[in-house]
Image (cartoon, rainbow, N blue to C red; front, side):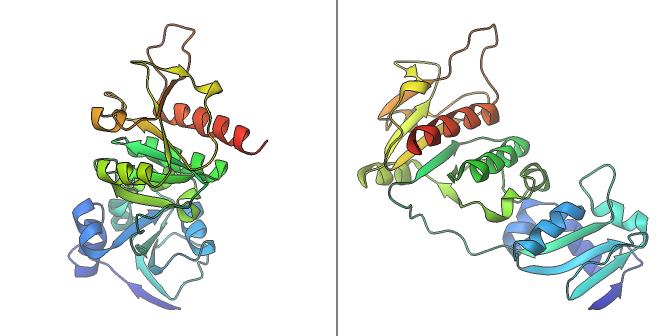
Amino acid sequence: MTVKEITSAQNHKYKYFKSLKTKKTRDNNRQYTVEGIKSVNDAINAGADIDCVIVSNSFGIDISTETVYKLPDELFARLCDTETPQGVMAVINMPPKNKKTLSQDKLYLYCDKVTDPGNVGTIIRICDAADCGLLLSRGTADIYNPKTVRASMGSFFHTEITESITVDDIESFRVAGFKIICSTLSGNTSDYRYADYGGSTIIVVGNEANGISDEILALADVCVKIPIWGKAESLNVGVASALLVYEAQKKRKT
């Protein structure tokens, strides 16, 4: 293991680490960061392609990696997205982008412009737990946003995620035999508990404020709704996703 010390905020490597907070830098360099002991260990255990680990001077736990950068606590804190940093962060190389090919007879969840990173992270965790593939539209929150990674609680590293799915892609999947089931409160809908989720199926959930786009709704084979018995207008998209994919897998696995 090689340990390199950084003592100044003007250090070019430090400036680069700090710039990874922005999506533009992450996309251009195909690298992202995760912070905290659990997230870093999850990355290591999952075999993620770790470029280096960054630790604060007060961090006293051994991390198994080739290159470590050590920083004063104050400089380290400026790199972090959390209010109470744990003193460790990893810089990870992004994997190659997934091809837009789906497995037949599998269940997928499609997020149509779900914009909150925390919601997307929660949905990644749900899909991991339910053994469900995840498709993300353009305009959905960046999966490499630190809030997304943190909310996924480690599921980020072993969930099948395909980004930048377009309306044309969904139409192609439909032509290839996938059933499109949209979750919506408007229009001609049926109770989600009685839908047929068998075979090649894509369940669609929509934007937190506006729901599913008209272009995607036009491709729906079935529209379903989760009953609202109280006075709430709707459910959080993460909660709705959990109900839908678990109901689908319950029917598929029995």
